Length: 76
Length: 209
Image 1: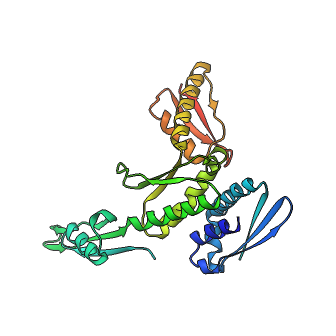
Image 2 (image 1 turned 120 degrees about the horizontal axis):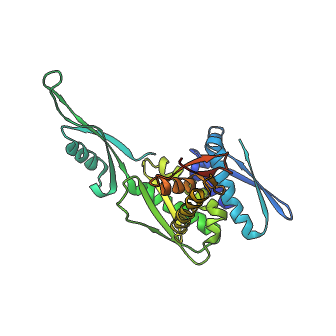
Image 3 (image 1 turned 180 degrees about the horizontal axis):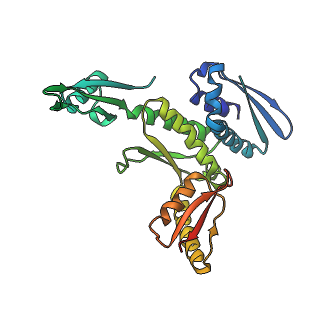
């Protein structure tokens, strides 16, 4: 799931080397914190949060497979 | 990063030739956008204007996107084959198809995962300098869904006419609503309109007086 989020974030940003994902894993849920370069925050959020929503949707599909709830937080 | 260049020439063909030799590729792997037609303008006397084109590599974008989609599918633990369709019917849309035994996960509820993957893929397309749109279909989901929506639209229109009152369809995303509007645009007995806010936006089919 972590790799998937990294993959998606790197695809949309201008500075893929700055993409970091840290994971806080609970029993039923998993929190993924996405860190990107300050100038790329807008890129991962998108107009009206459209890109953030798309990223979350794909990560959630992956979480469903593992029987968990995934929360993606975007941190600059 | 954008693999696109602009060139000039006496004619459009000349400008394209110049671009191709600069990029070192053949005509098939590029997309040409004419910025300015060349030729002689007689408006203010003899003024030879030069043609200007923008030439971009299409294959670059497609290749990267196919790689990305493949990686997403792999990360989701789904086995899927990706095919790039050679559909020349539309110059603006490039279609790829994903097939496999358990691709349902990639479609998601009401196609939302499919829409999300396509959204990300199109950002990568744009970043690689092509102005083509990518359309992803999974096990013909889009096609099947479009057929169902068209049928639904037709039946709802008949119902609206029979009951002589508007009929409201269920919530749909922009793409699906468009299919409904297009399906009924030639029906001159009803008109269609979308109302409400995303994600609950719905199509209302109203009989004309």
